Length: 298
Image 1 (cartoon, rainbow, N blue to C red):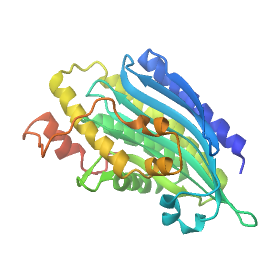
Image 2 (image 1 turned 60 degrees about the vertical axis):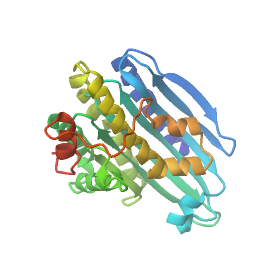
Image 3 (image 1 turned 135 degrees about the vertical axis):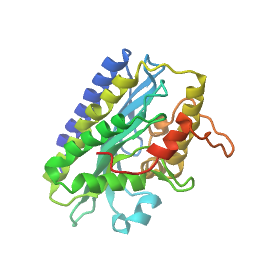
């Protein structure tokens, strides 16, 4: 496994995305390089109280270990007793304007090795969008960009990864999707290393083309306390998913990852209410009735 080649792509992707986000926001991201005592390290790039983004992070991590946590070996027993290496870029962006969706993207590679045996490796990743006030044309653009990025790898890839995303980013305890989905894949190793790496690169490079045009359309939309209040309420669902269901968060915390980097995905302002339901006929109700329903967006 060519770790140098992988690292060059992931660090280059992080730098390119941060550059575009800084140009969009107008303020610079902080840079925080860190080392992990158990092995490896990373570079966290963070913005808080930007001109546009209320909070956002674009993390690169390259971490290693001699054994895997129980959360990993319980799902994949074949990894027990293997040293491991994980590398990738993960980002979450929380705009201040409630008419601008939150977005998440992750691309990663995992390798587990054992003397005398072949490496076990796979790629994973994807991107998804979480609006507070949905606009059909925005969701269509996001999904079409995802579809077009995956088109060179087969006509069946986007529908498969779209469905996987709908199923993964689902809050079982709420019986509702987190947002409008996108694409998600894991355990990707069929077709050889080069195909899998190329697909992962295509997903990472497509993110800003999928997301920034949506923000550009909505960034000047007027809003008030009502919209901010609903945004804070819906952000609570984002927190619940990341802390209860997200496998990456669980793996990071259980494997001794850097807590600040792992939890940078959490929004800065969040609210919860007891058994709240939006009033019928309101824009808030439209989110539930129209957009939080998996469907063919393209």
